Length: 89
Image (cartoon, rainbow, N blue to C red; front, side):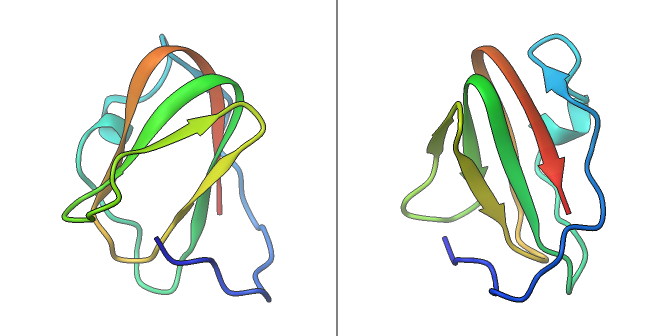
């Protein structure tokens, strides 16, 4: 996984999701558009962030941690128990 560029500025954040409210589309393969970076930020619990065709995938993201979402790269999350998280753009 690549680190995000250093001069990014957050402009949006999803609602807080948990294991019951996570939208189905986040658990299925999808991409964010070219030029947009994101972060999966876990507040409580843990989840797996999966990047298609990446040798280091899945990545376990625990409370207080995050995973960088690269532009135009297939990815999804696997809910592995009780969790609370947001997606930042």
